[in-house]
Length: 246
Image 1: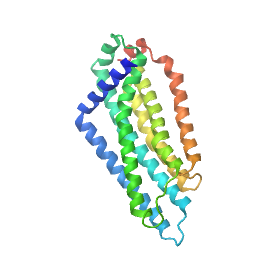
Image 2: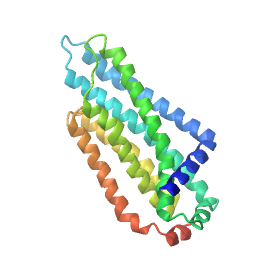
Image 3: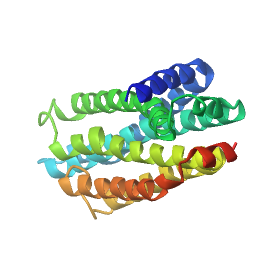
């Protein structure tokens, strides 16, 4: 684990040297999160609060959806951008091949680089999600009905979504190391819009409540499915495969 920690710390420092990329990623996340939160709040929560007796379950559903999209976009956009830039730079400069000449194993490199991308995105997602939760409660709920909160919405947004993206980043780095970074980037870029569109449709069509434990279980199922692909491809992550893919 000491090697993994060293690779992670080095990777984080390298990522944040790309200041323009990091700032653009943060800016895009902020714009997307604020835009989506405003749209959902004005279209769903605002009208729901105008009822004589607001339906707390329905409001929790919409708040859970907002928190899910906030967490998903925050960690998704940030991690995907940084992962692609990191993989391209590392492979074009031959850094990965040089690191494999040290006592580092492919697993050390894989886990360390994944954590270097995931950890900052996770922290950013938690901050954004908590901020959105507080702001919406202060603006819409607390003055009228008090705090709207379910354990399911917090676990989904702060635990399961990051877990899903950690599994995805493991998969992205497996593919990026043993094949082409562009292929890994396509996977990461497609995953974000496909999953977020699917979950929004399920919630807005009343198929599932975003504040419920069922929503959490569905997301956990997706995370486990990605984890299964990670395990299947794990055997391909060898020194020979990584070097030949340079």
